[in-house]
Length: 277
Length: 196
Figure 1 (cartoon, rainbow over the protein chains, first blue to last red):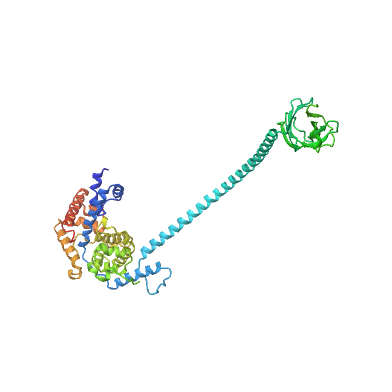
Figure 2 (tube, rainbow over the protein chains, first blue to last red):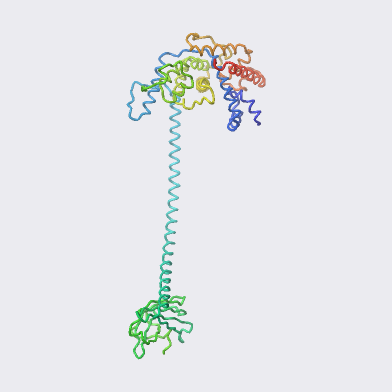
């Protein structure tokens, strides 16, 4: 319907004489039409004059006091600290009270349902969140492991760099033997402090019951045992070492495959070796 | 609960309807009492006219003033007169009661007649008495059918369709009468707003 058509309903609406469906349509229009709202207000003022057509009537005089007593009782109820006087009986807003009671019960019911629903929602969300937290925590653990490993690697690389940059550093190339032709390595050590680092690549992965062992073989002496280590499928090793002072002067560096706990003297095949001078 | 200061205790008759309702909204019991004193005759008369039952009407009158007490804060003078606000509450409450079970039996009384007087003008507030005289004489000038149509809608809460059925008239005729009657009331309000 158009504004004009609605406008023509206003006089009837002021008397509440429209059919329910018409009234609903008009109420919708009124929400958005200030002009019609103002017009309806004027028309309602006009319709209210009809109250004068009813002959005035005098209620029983005691009604005035009953009303004021009810108001006072309501006010007392509203105050938490006040004492309710027993003789103040609210007249009889029974219908009203029933509506209030029903309303309150309905509201309470709705509140309980809402609470239950939110409890369930929160509980389910909680379970889901716990699962997510557990998964995240596993991920963090893994990443922490990787981080630690990476940091180790980084630390050693930094150490290697530091070693290499020292003026007193000495670098020895290790070559693969017949047993491990693709293997090669570098051994760096500081001639002043004996701090050393072995870097090797291309070594066969260490068998479960074996380990590689580093040897320092000073010229004219028997081999001195260094550290033992294992290599995974990458064939890569980076191993900090402390060079024995006796080995500093003129030694051959060799790596053999030994039993898992290492040996006092070399027993296995040589894998890597520095050139014997 | 006695308030230290009540706007109303001073000069009740000097206070406008609007200020009276604002005072009620502020929790002023004396203002509610003044409001009761000022409107009880008109509102009680209106409620009796709708319900045709004194006892029930007293019940409803009580409800009406309790609602005024609780909801006076809703009154907005920009959206209509205080008189309209009060009368609308009384009419709605009475019509609700009429429609609820048990009250329907009393229906069927002649709605178009001007019922006989119960309270003399002397007992009415002078201003209200004047308003009443103006409105009643204006309504008396309306053709009988127009007045009857307005009364059936206003005092019995009938819709246009129901009125047409009740009177055995075409719906279009009912609409025309209603429109003419409302036009008259509106003119009245325009001419003598301060008196009615």
